[in-house]
Image (cartoon, rainbow, N blue to C red; front, top):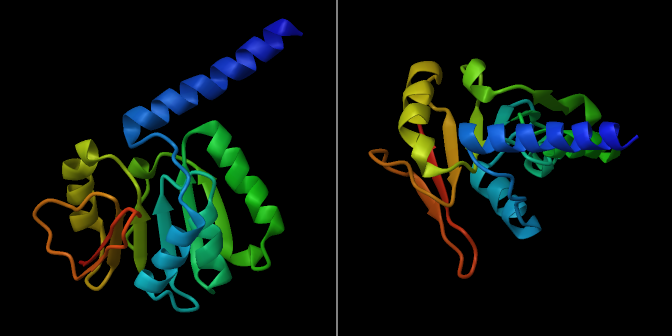
Length: 169
């Protein structure tokens, strides 16, 4: 019994460490910030929205409820399982999809909106991926840190809350 518990904890820890190394630790978005994201992204029904490193899926759920085909990628096991569970409780289940996969190995070319809350240490590599894959007009929304060398179309700054930076490819 103790061995099963030990290995379960070990698996969760390894995926958490791997997720940190590949993008960022899991830090849930605040409810107020989810609403700010929806307003800034101006999501329309039928749009394709990707949250790369989606954590517990709260932005994916909000985008799906707004009518978007929302997909979240997550590689840390605990937030992935929480995101899958969240999908059981939303109204628009058909538009909500959580995938246990490293977003670096996915093509994001059909996106209308890309959202991420990742560490700036990976931004150079991420910029190259986005520039290569995204079509013109795709909205890219970065939470907290701006993308160096890209000019934001909009900046959503609210006192005592992290900043959103919206770019258009």
